[in-house]
Length: 465
Image 1 (spheres, helix red, strand yellow):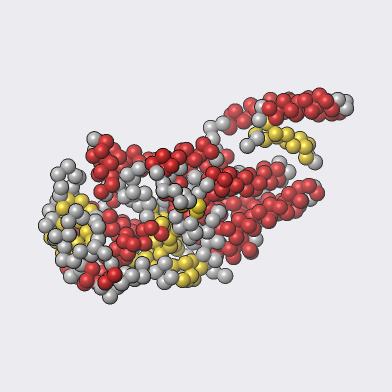
Image 2: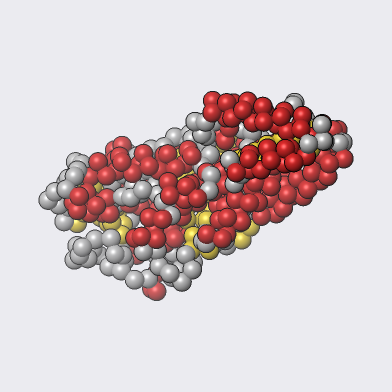
């Protein structure tokens, strides 16, 4: 089975056939940086990172473009409320997003363009639209004329033009030919940043930014456009409309991840703050949070709860435990070992991570049995399968990302040496049949947060969780 993906525009699962054989181009709507990210914001980053990793593993040369919207109404409002320039807000929050992507193991994008760096491309796109009769300047603004493209507008979101409400992207619709026309460019206002255009100074509209950046880096026709399901309308609908009206093929596949939900409770400011990435990574490790976000199917909604987060962390620890124990027996892992066919089939079927992780857990279960039986050949095969599957998912505990994610490598070596002395004393006590002393040493270690496990290869320890 080849890779098949759910295409929002076709409303069905389609076989992935790239524009150029052996290459894949992905544009992901990245952060609008008016605030630091919570886990709902970063979910798409994790989901599309898994897609990218799977495409790389499948042999594609992937170009991954993830933009930054560093100017829009929300950023301007936050800056005004704080009494700081707009770029201070944008820069501060972009750094927070970059840190969050990195700490959750997302590969850096091939290119990460900022909207404000692409005004010339936006002007060129508006000129093409005006020349084609699909856009018009009015009162310093520039609008897309949706009636001029009525036969196609609404195709992505499966809506009809006559059922759409007015576009709510300007303070007044008085300059518009039709209330449903959307802004490509917003004319100059006091206190707002502006750039010069043939139609006067102003700033870009949100939808225009992404069309200009996507086609600059991926070409007029590219493979995949991704983002959250909340972006389908109006943002992605307007991107698709203005790009195709200008003559570009634009994205051939549209992929959208589901939202993070908080039960019936609205995400209040306090609740939202508790879900900021630095706060959540105090409750679970970053790799465990990545597991939590990657485990559900990308198109499904996630119902957040502390219990579900803890369950995800425990599930990952079971995988990690096998990998750690097996690596003490098998020192050279075959990085090119074939993946289990069931795992391949799961990811080829619209990136089915729940089924893929079920395969991981089944292999881990077999691996634990092989460890207990002392079957090194079987352990070697199952460890290689496990690590290679986890590498695709960005979850391999032995990868550089997770081995170096903390700054405690030197401390770990020191603790290892000290615990080693205690374990030697425990073994000596057991050898002379002083089991009370041996149990006492084990209990002291437990009170210090050290869990000791007796294995066929001798005692091993780990920090309690």
